[in-house]
Length: 382
Ligand SMILES: [Zn+2]
Ligand SMILES: [Zn+2]
Image (cartoon, rainbow, N blue to C red; front, top):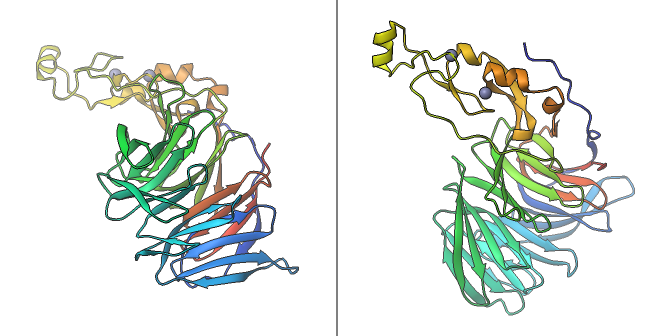
């Protein structure tokens, strides 16, 4: 039997501070306005709203701006207070950039607005003149977009499951590399410019941490969702990754621990523990008069084993397996209780999250759901 370990309370449970209700349709994206009790949201109901907290504690829309078509995304820069909004029709206005976009990113340092469209085009515009500077065609529509200001690399995660890395110049770009690791489409990207780590969330339920700064090609998997990963947010100073799933689950990952890569699965014609043949190994089955067995793999050592030699399950949090997975009997014995201690905390947002925003200065976690509600939670970070 697997040892029953109670998840250690690493952090306190998020407390629901407020609900922002009143949108006529799903809020595609929203952000907390720093230093003010405010929330900006863009919605499929064609509105841009700034909600300010009243004395009653309720959020009321104090600015309401109707757009010509549903808003799919936004990028808000707190320093310049410039808001760029992506719509599903096209044209550019003075303070609001309107492009056919799925993702949008405003880069203050370069005066660039980066965007990806349903037409598989990645484009960048000058944020001052609105002029289109360049473009690149990705292999599929892209939902993830991140930028490294220091090296001018852009990361684009698309529906085919790959992440494209481009180096941007003022008016041209070059392909650096592509990351392939997900079996489903990439739904979200998050970049930590300090540790130089890229996180990609996918509809395959997993998150991959691509360690670029480590220069060893390490890619670490994080398995903590039972449904599509929809959005990611990162708190660099505490090294916590926040991921949200289609099932409403919020997982807060402690990335300040030494994590391990999962092993390659080994190939064998017989169990690498008890030497019984696998079912396609007719010769050994005949010679030893034994019935062929099904092949399984231990998630910890990667060995090909039979069911009898891998009857136990364990979580392996440092390998990213927060849920119990198949391990061989000897690995099961070798995993200590300490190694089974969770490295993430799990919370139920009680809505299907489409967007998450984390304000690290106040510990506010904002989620927007398909229920048309924005929830703001207090999450004190330790
Ligand atoms: Zn066996
Ligand atoms: Zn093993």
